[in-house]
Length: 85
Image 1 (cartoon, one colour):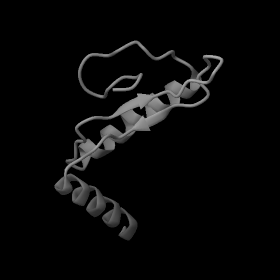
Image 2 (cartoon, one colour):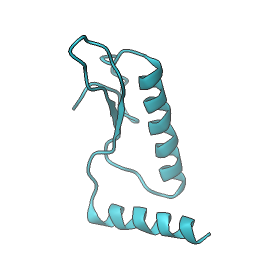
Image 3 (tube, one colour):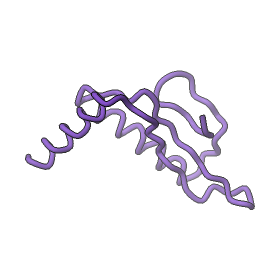
Image 4 (cartoon, helix red, strand yellow):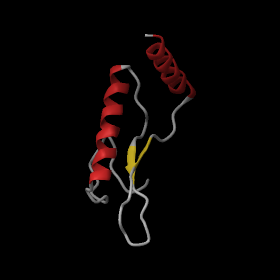
């Protein structure tokens, strides 16, 4: 697993709190909440921070991990229903 925290389980503190990492953590939590409301749970969602040569965190990524085919189909269905609304 990369540097970061997961939406479930114990919080890891390997990632420095910067505005960029906080933005990614907030986005991960908002997405996890929205997916949960739609009845979808991804097995792993975390935030990863690529490190620059100088050790600074320039951006952070919300890593969605992998999911099963049924979960992918559920995601597609929720997205398409949202587009049609």
